[in-house]
Each structure stands twice: as C-alpha cells, then as structure tokens.
Length: 493
Image 1 (cartoon, rainbow, N blue to C red):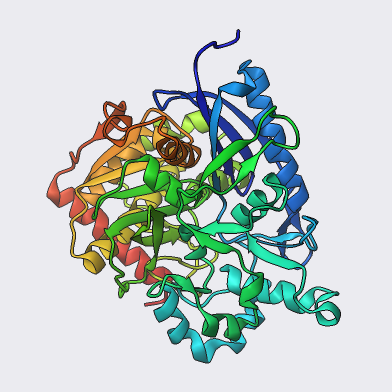
Image 2: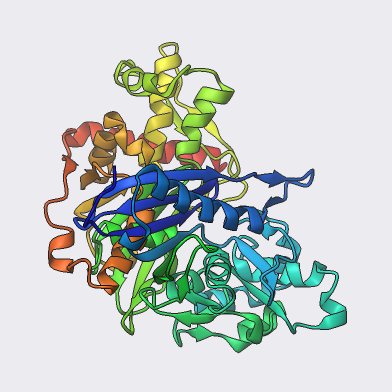
C-alpha cells in the first residue's frame, strides 16, 4: 500500500557481514528494513577480504528492496545517510573500478609493516590517539600500495585510497565525491587529532601519498547526490556519513560530555563522548572523534572488546551447549547461585583495556557443582565484566562517572545480561526498543541536516527498558574480585 504524503530518510548501514537499508519516517521511527549479505573471503593465511563491487551492488539492491517491499514512492525520499564498518580499506581507480579486494578491519596481514615502524609507535599514538596496529587503515593502505602490481610502474596517479564510506560515496555519486568524514578519518592512523588534518609525517611513515586520500568533511556535510544507478527519477542528496559506532552514539542522543553507549555485537564498542577537547588515554583506551557537525568536532574515548556476542556463538556452535539462543537466558538464570565459575574469553588474547596478546581463555573457579548452566552463565557474565572494566578505565581517563549506559545490539534483549551489566557497572542501563542504531544515527543526522527533524523533539519519549542496580554490595564485590582473580590467572600473573 502506497504511503501518500509521508516522506522518509534512507539510512544505509554497511557492516562487516552485510549491508542494510532502513526507511526512517518523519517521527524518526523505522518503517522498513532490507538486508543483503556479502561473502567473507578468507584465504589459507587467514587474510580477510571483501569484494568492494559486491558491497556496492548490495547497497544499491538493499535500498531498492526496502523501497519496493514497502511501496514507497521514489519522490518521498528526502535524503540518504551512510554508516559503515570502520577501518576496512579499499583501493580503486578514478573510473570507480576496485583495484584489489578490500582489506577487512579484522585482517592482520599488514603486521610486518607495523613491526618495522615500531620505533615510531609512541609518536604515532600521540598524534592519532590509537596504538600502532595492523588493524587500522594506515598499515592496510601501505600493504595495498606495496603489493599492487601497477603501483611501481604508474605511481600514485589515478589511484584512490579510503575506507568503505569513501568507496560508497565515490560510486554512489558517479565519481563526483571523493570524501570522508571526521569519524572515519580519525580511525585511519593517518589523521592528526590535534590539527584535525591528514598528517604529512604520518603519511610518510606509511608511504601513503596524501594526494590519494579523500577530502575530510563534517559528518553532516552535503556529500553529493545519487540516483542509485538510475533508480531514482531525480538525484537525492547524501547528507551524512559516519563510522558505525559513532552513528550509534549519535542515535542514542549521547551528544554531551560524559554520555556513553555500548554496542553488543560479535565484539563490543564502548564509547564515551568527552566533549570538544582532546584527552589522551592512560588506561588502555583509544581516543577518536565522535563526529564533526557544522565545524565543531566532539572527541570520544573508546574501548573495543573482541569477544562478547561471539562468546554466545562459541557456546552454541562449538560447545553445543545451546540448540537455540532462546535457551540462553533461562539457563543463566537457573545456574547454581553458589557456583563460582568465571569464564575469561581470551581466545585470541585480551583487547581493551588490558592489551595482552599472550593471555589465553580460561574457565576459572569450577567445582563439582559446575555444569552446563553454570558455564552458560559464566559466558554471559563475561560480557558484562569486560564492558565494566572498559567503563572503569573511561572514568579514570575522563574524571567523569558513568551514571547511565545506553546500549544496543541483539544481546540487549537478554534480560539476565542487562541486569547483570547494571549490577556490575553500578550504572543505570537503558535498552531501547528500536534496533539498527548505526543506520538510525546516519538517518537522524541526514534528517536534521535537511530540516526533516528537530533535535529537541527527535529523542523525546523514545521507549526504553531501564535496568537499575539490584545486587547487594557484598555479592557484587565478591563477583568482581573473582573476575579479577581469573584475569590474573589467564595472564600468568
């Protein structure tokens, strides 16, 4: 049924597993959604790649799917906003042809490049706010340049390097827009957080010519127009671009200093808005930019955790302790209350705020009472323990107490986990009823830009489930102490 008179924003979320398009109506609600998954290309060396052309085509198809499924007139679309998987790096030529498969954020093939730059590691961290690592685009770009067959013969003329947002903007606008936003630029390790520009010295370290990088713009810029490969009768403006975690922060309304959110996915991104001034982390976190809006940037502290939702996948697919995810919450709730089993999911070491690549996963504190339910509960609780540790690091770095934590992602439907998160963190946890917060953030920013929304009303009255701390101090402190003991044991300390 055609929805006469209603106008919409299209929010695109291009993520690691696939691409989705959501229709966001005049009240800021999701009116429709369509998804397209892409192939995960993993070779014998463990290198992870994506086909940039497949990603672009899936974005186009997802938008068409959601329009046609919900019979929305093409003229009803006011604007498009884009959120994207961060750090994944693409190389293409001026014609818009991808020259190599994209190097995915989780791919460590550029490790040799960062190892030879180790002496500059502290200098790089001070400029960029993030530790020298092959998981950021600078090393990935260097690897692509060093391994691309035409690079040596032709030089850098005609080559474009960027993150997925830049690739999509370039293709959606027919090559007219070669741009990125502040949030994505701040994650490349080529961007200086103090000058807010590409840094010539950093580019020199990695051998990446500054001329082949995109123009850096505010996150609510006019990034160009798209007819979606001829689908729209008239071009539609693209009015926002942000990294997915940053878009989620924006959608939660965390626009003021000290406001924080956690996205629960395969891993987790814990992020705090720290205002308009740079602050260096001394407790194992990264500093980045939340966004740039109308010439003003906001900084964030961020901690990324490798294994949160992935722990549940491990329980189900590897240990076979769950036949379906619906069993998770009742199993955790039914575990023996006096059992002291703790799981540290350091399957590939520990990430923020510990940064210990040598740590190994461990079930700690088991007894004869430990069984299926107790192991499941320990896995669920490990998610909250890790996030709580990042929150404590944020409070130390910022000097601000986290009284409220906004959350999103599939695991937030698990009431046991959300209550335990509130108990361990000692903070109120706010779980919204709506999903797809990365796509929503991009759509909200685009809608604000074109005047479809007003900031004072957009976030008012959004339905949320609120979890308040209930656990007694003695029990809470005992659980936190067991977690710290397990951490020390898995790190050999």
